[in-house]
Each structure stands twice: as structure tokens, then as C-alpha cells.
Image 1: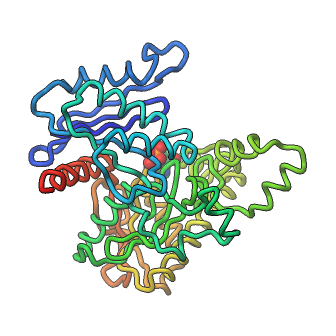
Image 2 (image 1 turned 135 degrees about the horizontal axis):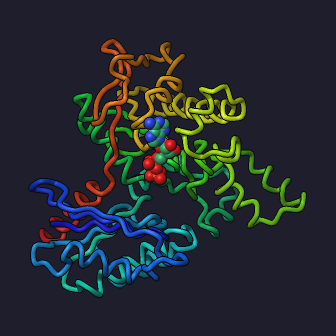
Length: 375
Ligand code: ADP
């Protein structure tokens, strides 16, 4: 049995997974950590609750797998957590100041509670660490880039690894398919994966770049930032606006895609513009990644929007028939589960794959254990 811990800034999500048996034995979420009026003051208190719920002292527990958002430049895959690894995750805190500290807090508590158990860190950035230099390098002064650690890292890697593998299996090309993964949730990213290896991804040094998201702008002309600062905004104000008050929210006042779409249906022009900006950007990335990959076997939709919205999938792909992409309207409906939604004669398959980051973390944790045992 493996315990998967995803310690975020204000919540801890956890799952008890048995890779051999009925997969998910238990799952839960402790919320509102450290918020006023909450009875969970900190991550220690949250993890103690998790420990009680999953019987963390049980002899059946073989390992704990932790989600860690940023692995910095060092980590190219999951690793067994040691004191050195903890130090290196601390060094990546400036790259993910909102996420890595809470991931570390979770690790610290579970290591104290079960010092005898192997614990593994699974990084969101790791799957993207193989992105070739041409795609991960920003075209700025090299010396400056090196001094400040400026490069594309990419995020959503654990989800992208899981979804690209599942989509490749769906089209009968496990391990060899060229896949475009569109992870569309509150955060959103597109990735190009060739034979299991990520070759480009839309999020960059931070999760701000790329697609239009719920509250994040995605791509923009960097000169806009200087224009705003010279106009009187502080750098912190600009950053906060781009992260928290942009994207769908900035354009129409709603960041929840369901609400945006209801407003579009009722003829709301602001919502329609927001939705069109979102779809236009997404189409641009699909085109770009078709070019990056040369041949695409399957486009896979995942995340809250990608998995549930047949309409977004249809709107985004309509007009791409000349590129060999054709949905089947009878398949592209709102049903659950991993499946193909493209027409039989579509040169490029289209899949919907519900993501499962926890299962992927459990799987990678178990692989690290097997590797360390055989060494
Ligand atoms: P997170 O990125 O926080 O994990 P999710 O992957 O759950 O979030 O995605 C949340 C988004 O999915 C929200 O914008 C929500 O409106 C959207 N969503 C969920 N169901 C639907 C649906 N049926 N149609 C359109 N959007 C949906």
C-alpha cells in the first residue's frame, strides 16, 4: 500500500493506493489549513489527521509518495527522499514560492511520523526535463539566463505523463505515439509528447505562460509589463494581476468555465469574447504542436474542462478538418472514462482521458522502490 500526499498551501489531499488490488482504498482532503476560524492551524495538524484516517502506523504501508511542484534544474525523475533531497527542494523554493514550502511541510511531518518508511518525491517538472534545448531555452542574453536560472521548466508533468501514456495505449501505440496533451483545468497547459518523451510544453519558467487560464493571462508581450510599471503599477501589483485577475476572470469577471459558457449561451458579449480568446489561443497551440511533432497520432483532452466539456472540444477542433482532425459528434458527448471521440476516418485520433495524478505518483513511487531494492 502506498500513501500519496499532495500538500498544497491551504489543503492536503491524500490517497491510499494498492497497485495490486482494488486500486483506491481511501481518499480524502483536509481543507482551510491556517485560515481564520479553521480548526486545522498548520500542515502538522493536517498531516496528523491524515495519519489517523489512513492508519499511518500500519505495517501494510510500504511507502509514501509526495507531490512536489518544482524540482528545479536537478531533478529529472522521481527520487527517494533523503536529507540532501530535502535541501535541494528547498533550493527550488524561489522558483515556486507558493507551492514548494507546503510540499516540504508535508514531507517533514510524514518523515517524522514514519522515519522507517521510504518516501519518494514526484516532481511536476520532471516529465518536462527532457525537453530539447531548442524548446526550453528563452532567447535572451545567455549569461543573464544562467545567472538567474531562466529556462522553461513546464508543469502539469505528472498529469501529462499519465494522460499521454493512456492516450498512446488507446490508439494502440503504447510507447511510440506522438501525442498532444491539453490539460484544461483552472490552470491549463498544452504539451507535445513524442514516444513517451515531452518535446515542448506551454507553461514556462513559471505556470504563467501559455494558454489562457481561469485567472492567469498566459502568453503576452513582455513589454506590456514595463509599460504598466512605468505607468505607475508596482512589479508586485503587475504580477498579482497577471496571476490572479487575468485570464477568463480578467476578461469577463468569471473564472469558472461552466458559468462563462452559460453566459455565452444567454448572449453575453463579454463572456463571448473571453471564451473566444481562450479557444483561439488553444487552437494556436494545437497548430504549433502539430508542427513541432510533424505527425500527430492523438490529441488528448484532460482536466475539468477538457474531460467534461464536449462543447469546448467541438469549438476548438472545428475548422481543423484539413489537418486531419475530425470529431465524431455521437462519441463526443459527456460520458465518463477514457475513450476516443474522433471519427473512424480522422487521421489524428482525439481522446478524452480523465487524469489521475495520484495513481501516477503511486506508480512512480513504486518504481523508485523497485529500483532502489535492485541496486
Ligand atoms: P484544477 O485545475 O483546480 O484541478 P479542474 O481540473 O477540476 O481544476 O478544472 C476546473 C474547471 O473545469 C472549472 O473551470 C470548471 O468550470 C470546469 N468544468 C468542470 N465541469 C465542466 C463542464 N461540464 N463544462 C465546462 N467546464 C467544466
